[in-house]
Image (cartoon, rainbow, N blue to C red; front, top):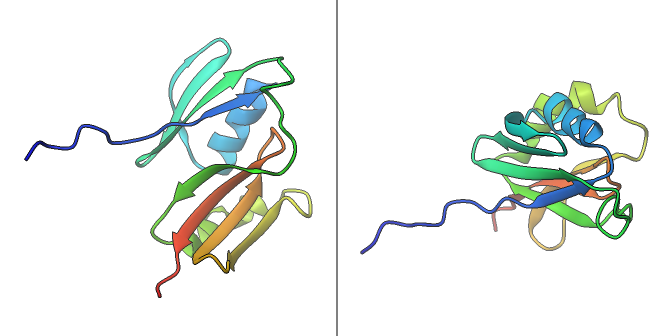
Length: 127
């Protein structure tokens, strides 16, 4: 049997201001910048990674409809919440939801990202 070749999917976060996205991901959520060049950054936290691309194209950047856009599966969403809580408490009311059990079997922490969509950490609820 061959060793697995695929090991990660890295979504692209299209944003209007790279600096705002980096502040959100690094200062608030604890990601680290692995690579950066003007208008682009690759960030990682443990095995989760995301690519951030600055764009003034309104069709790509700043969706702003609170859609589930960035989902990170974690072992313990409550541990992530405890870690981030002091920073999350500084966000405007309504920008954070959870952790909460959902009817589809996930416990989720939803945080409004600078582009207006949701960055979610989720743990499967044991059945």
